[in-house]
Structures are given as structure tokens and as C-alpha cells.
Length: 268
Ligand code: GMP
Image (tube, rainbow, N blue to C red; front, side):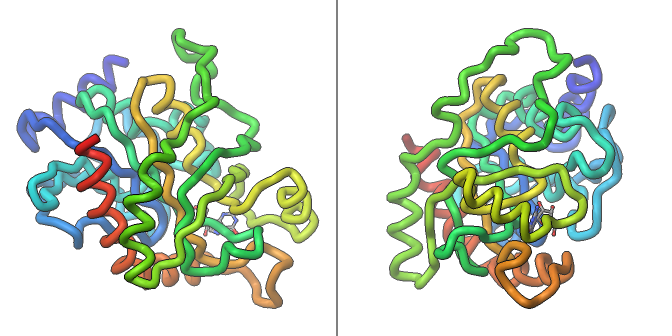
């Protein structure tokens, strides 16, 4: 905790004492900086207590953005269990956002599509998740431990997203995420298992951050981008470079959804 406070102090000294409307954690290939003006920037490596170096596709910078009249704290990069981190370490950005008094968190990620409607390019508002990481960010944490996750992901933003998605021709769905530790992709048999368990999409992230956010009392929206069909659903091999490319090519639509979310969710 003292390190989180030290990290928050550093952010305040670099960015000023800002009242953020929203924090966003950007997954592989996601870019929010192009939606607004960058008011401040610092490498993750400067933050006390930062758990690890970023992985390719994650620039590893903390940004202070102005998007219209909103202030956004953007984590351009995240921490994953497949880097050898605990779920608690992976949730570092959420604890930092909490220490900076943020109360809304948008979590984004590239995901593989499992259900038929989850084709590449589709955006998915998370309805719920299956935590198959074998870890929980609240393990070893001081109480609260027994946190209620029955309504973890906000659903009331769907209409404002759909109002933008429809006219812009953006495919927007709702779905359940399965989080696996990775870093290998799944086998076709594992994808068939996940489908039978009720998962619509699969990734290696989001869940530690979402659970920590619930424990910290933050409102959470989960928005995933399907970058590939999951293993066994296509003849093509899975490749992280394609995941990054699919993320980058969806930056226009993501920007539109992001602005709609900022406009509406932050006025609720
Ligand atoms: O390309 C790997 C990165 O994108 C990881 O950070 C995953 O969270 C995400 N990802 C994209 N597609 C898939 C997939 O098919 N399966 C899993 N487990 N993660 C994926």
C-alpha cells in the first residue's frame, strides 16, 4: 500500500491534482490517445511498485488525456498473469486509479471469438466472466475479501454504445468472457470446453482488474474487441501480430465508442 501511495503521489506531481472522470486500461492494440489531447505522460517504469515491464503491443505508459471536456487517466498497457505475476500484481493499475480517487473504470482487451456472432472486428460489452486464471487479485489482500460479483459489469451503457454502433456499422454484442492464464493460446478442445461452459469470448486479462475494481468500489465497464476466431474455429494459426493488427485497424470504431461512453456514462 505505501508503494501505491508513492505511485499516486508521483502521478499527482507530474499531472497535477486532477479530478478524473474515468480511468481506462487499454488492451493489445487499443489506442485512446488519438481520441484526445495528451496533457501528461509517464512511463510505467517510473512508478514505484510497478510489477513488471510491458509486453510487445503494450507501450507501458500512463497518460493524462483531455477528451472534449473530460479528463481521462489512461493506462496504455497492462500487466498479465502470463508474465509470471499474481492476479493481485496484475491489478496494480486499479489500485493506483483508486488511490487517485477515480471511480469509473473502463477495461478493454483483445479477445478470441467463440460464439458464432463473435467474429473479428466485433466489440463486446462484457455481461459477465468465468475466472479460470486459478488466481484471484484479492488473495493475500487485506479485507474486504468476500466481495459480491453478482453485478460486476455495468450494462446500462449498452444503449448509448448501440446508438453509436448502429449508424456507424460497428458490430456490437454482449457476452461472457473466459479468462485463461496463457500465454499459449487454447487448444481446440479447450475452446469447445469454454463454449459449453457458456463463454462467448476468451482472453488472458481483464478479470484481475475487474475483481479488484469491484473490491475498491469502482464502477466497471468491460469492452472487448474480437481480434481473431478462437482456436479450432478457423484453419488459420493464431498469431499475436494479427491480434495487434486487428486492434490497430479497429482504433477508429473504438474511438467512437469511447467518446460515447465518456459522454454518457460520466453524466449518469
Ligand atoms: O494475442 C494475445 C493477447 O490478446 C493476450 O493478451 C490475450 O488477452 C488476447 N487474446 C486475443 N485473442 C485471444 C485468444 O484467442 N485466446 C486468448 N486466451 N487470448 C487472446
